[in-house]
Structure formats: C-alpha cells, structure tokens
Image (cartoon, rainbow, N blue to C red):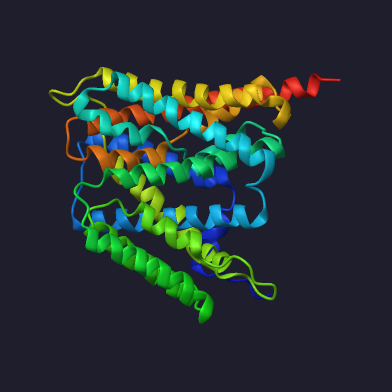
Length: 364
C-alpha cells in the first residue's frame, strides 16, 4: 500500500494545528534562548536576523488582520460579546500601561507598548490546559484579537520622525490592493507581495511595520460562496510557516537574554514589568468581566482565568520591547520581565481555569 505523502506546508500545519503545540514551540524557543545566552554567552544580530524578524512580524500581523476581519465578517465581534470584549480590552491595556509608566524610569517609559498586548498562541494554550469551556474560550480569543489590534496601534506610535511621503505611499498601496484584489480576483501571491512591499515602505517611513501588515490582512476578501476565500487560502498558506518557523525563531533571537542585570540598568524594572503585565492585565480585564459577568454568564474565577491567560504576552511583548527599547540598557531587563510575567501568567491561568471548571461542575 502506497504511503500518503504530505508537502512541507501540510506537515507543519498538522504539527501546529493544536494551539498547545504552537505555544510549546514559542515558549521552548524562549527558554532555549535564555539558557544559551546565560550559560553559553551567545548572541547574534546581523542583517539576516533582522530580515527574519521583519518576515516574522509581517507574517504575524498579516494573520492578525485576517483573523480580525474574519471575526467581523462572521458576526462574532458584534452585540453584547463585542461590548464586553471592548471594555475588557480597554481595561486590559490601560491598567498595565499606567503601572509601567508610573514606576519605570523616564527614559524607559516608551516600553509601555510591550506590556499591553496578548500572545494569541499562548492564550489559546492556556484555554486548552486550563479546561476553559467553549464560551469562555471564545470571549478570551475575542479580547486577545482586540488586544492585538490595540498593540498594533500602540506600535504605530513608536516611529521617530515618520516620513510623510512613505506613509502616503503605504495608504495608496493598501487602497489599490483592496480595490485590485476584488476587481481582478488576485490571490495569495499577490497578497504576500503586497504585504512585503508595505512592510518595506513602513520601515522606510520610520514606522513599525506591524500596522501596514495588519492593514493588508484586514482588507483581504473573506467571502466566496463557491470556493475558499483569498483570506482562507492566504492563512492556510502562511500559517504553518509563521507559527512553526518564523515566530519561534523570532522569539529565540529576542530572548538571547542572559539572566543578569546590565551595568547601569535598574533591577527593579523587572519587577515593574512583571507587575504591569500580570497584575495590570489581570485586574484591568478581570474587573470589567466581573462587573459584566451577568451579561457574559461567567463566574469570578472565570473572569480571573481570562485575565491571567491574556497576560501571557510573550511574542507581542517582545516585539514591543524590540520596537521601543532596542540597544538601550533597559531592553534586557524589560525582556526578562516579559519572560517572568509570561511564565507566571501561564501557570496562574491554567490553575484559575481548572478551579473555575471545578466550581461550575459543583453548581446545581
């Protein structure tokens, strides 16, 4: 009997189909990076690693744009769910930013961008390990997607002296793409080529490329009654490579952080970062969900579980660190804070999820 063969893309897609595996790759890459930097004094940064980082960021935020557009198209982001999720997102971004800006050194305050967003892959893994029920998982992922949108907008503020000509070029390219892909029924390659062009233009403009890649994803057509939409085909084509290769490599490169404090860097900034992410995120989201729990039909334990899961901010937080604090004495300590906060949030999210599940099981 002839064995069934798979293309590399199919193999990788099967491997990362479960969020736990995708999150495991990302978290494993982070642990490996820290260990290698701490005990092997290893660090690498060159034009090739920069290219890998830009590909990872472009691909990741293209997927975020596709995801958010699909949620709007399907109606998930509507009604009471959207209202609760929006309120929770605002709280979950405002409180961490306030804590960080209030206690971080003035020269490091731009790093607030790193503490406001959520890592969708890790949050999804927490829902699986914590036994979140389906409705709770949907609410968390809605908050996570909106969180990432907020993170994109926050990253857009990190550019220094943006060049107006290139910004105008980005707007024109995205607008032309939105019209032409519908007019001429272009597909995946056209989407990827446009994303690459927009990422390059954003970099030339002096802005973080995340917003441009997100914009391309958000305008991709999402409905085709006869065939899979361009958005579905694009996601199917790039998701395995982004999730299984580029994001783990990106995380590895940005967690080559030795567990020691650089000369002149404030050690307490690690604690500030952990507090901003874990306490800020959990309280900002948890309070809103607790106050609206009758509308969402969730318990206090479940509200806390969602808050902890949303505080697992590894990938997007590291993107924020790279965008705001690169080559400064604060980069390493904030990065260590992000790693510590993510580990704490994952553990607490799983525990809170299990307790919430047990509590609901005991209800009559």
